[in-house]
Length: 303
Image 1 (cartoon, one colour):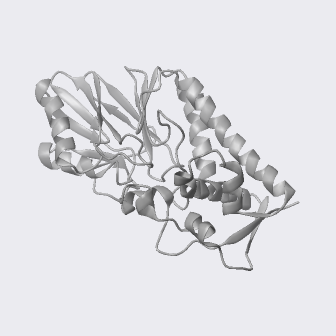
Image 2 (cartoon, rainbow, N blue to C red):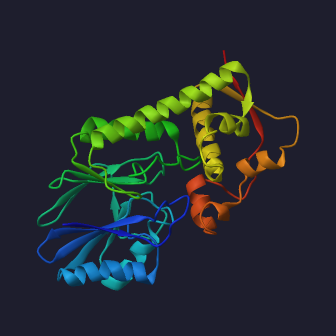
Image 3 (cartoon, one colour):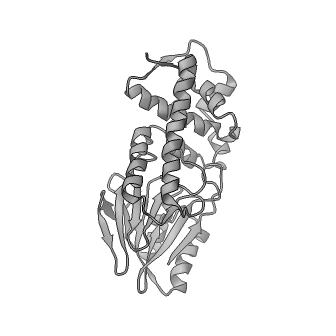
C-alpha cells in the first residue's frame, strides 16, 4: 500500500504542497519517503497512517536536502526512532549513507537507490521493485517541470539523469513525484521532460543567433506566456543552460556596460518571499541564490 501525504506548504515553488509517502514493506512495517517539513500536523498524519495499519516505521528515505523535503524526516525520526537514509553527500543529519545502486531490502519490498543529480547534487530516486514504481522527488513531478538552478543544479547532469531513467526504468508503471499527482505513463512523461529541455535550449540558442542577449531579455522572449511570478525561476533556468553552453565553448559572457533596470534586477536578484510565501530558505535553495548579487551579463553565441 502506498499513501500520499501532502505537506501544508503550498506556494509557487511547491505547487499544492510537497508530497510525502508511506509505503507498506511488510507485516506491521512501513517506510516513509520525504516526510517534508517539520510541521506537527503533517508529522502526526504520518504517525496516524502507521497507527491505523498497526505498523511501525522501519526506515525514512529522503530524496534530497531541500528544506521542503528533509526537515520532516528528522522530526519523524525523533517520534519513531526509525533511521534516516540519504545520499552520502547530504548535508543534513542522517543515519545511513546511500550510494547509487544500493539495494534496500525489506520483508515484502525492495527499493533500489539511484543517484540522480541535476536538480540537487545529493538527489536520490528510489525504485520500488515490487510496485514497479519510481519515487522521484524533484527530478520528475506530476505537474509541470522542475527548476534546475546553479550552483546546486546542473543542467547536463539533470539531462543525463532523465536519459538514465528512461533507458533503465521506462518500463515503470508509476512515478510518485515530490509535487503534483502520480504519473501513470512514466515513459511518456520522461520523453516529454527530455524533449522539453532540448526545446528550451534550442530557443535560447536561436535567440542568441540573432543577437547577444541578457538573461532578462531571454526570459522575456522565451517565457512570454508564463506567469511573471515565476520569471525569477525561469531566469535561473536560463542561467543553467547558459552555464552548460559556456562549459562547452558555445557561449561567452561579458559584463553589461550599464546598470540593470529595476525590472532586470528583480529577475536576477528576486524578492524570495514572493516565490515561496515568505519561505526564503526554500526559495533560496530551489533557485540557488546566495548572499551575493547575481552579476548582469551579456551572452554571445561563439561562432
